[in-house]
Amino acid sequence: MGVREVGGVCEVVHDYEDDYLQMARADGGEYLGIAELVQGAARRASPPGSVLLAFGFSDGAPDPEDPEGEWSEVIRTYRRQSRHEYPPIYRVSIRVEAKALGSEETAAYWRAKLAAYREAVARVRREAMSDG
Image (cartoon, rainbow, N blue to C red; front, side, top):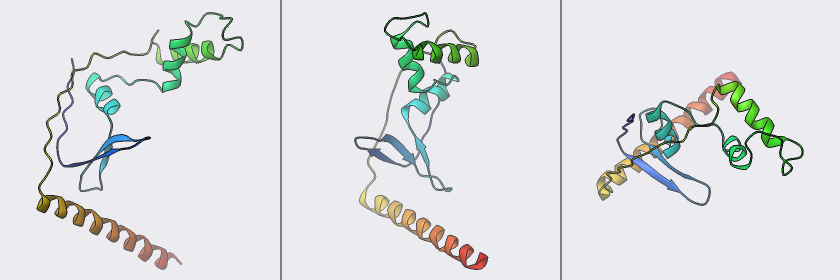
C-alpha cells in the first residue's frame, strides 16, 4: 500500500458543492481533495466519474437498456486508452490528525493571506498600466 503524507496549515472548505482542503503555501495555496490523496498514494489515477458510471451500468456488451450504446462506447474508449479492463478500486486507510489554531495564529494567517491577495491585485494593475 502506497502512502502520501501532507501536512501544514490549511483552510477546510465545505459546502454543497465543495469538500477540500486549501493548503497554505508561499505560492498561494494548493487545493487538496481526498481523491487526489488516494490517487497519489496508489500511483494510479482514477478516470472521470462518467467512466465509473458506465461500468456501473454496463459490461460493455450490447444492452437493451443502452440502445444507443453510449455506455458501451465509454467502456471501449476507456479500455483502449488506459489498457486496463476495469477502472481501479482502492483499498484505503485514512488517519487524520488536526488541531484548530489559536486566535493569534489564525489572525496572522488571514492577515497574511489578505496581504498576498492585495499585492497580487496591485501587481496586475501595475502590469496593465505599463502595457497600456
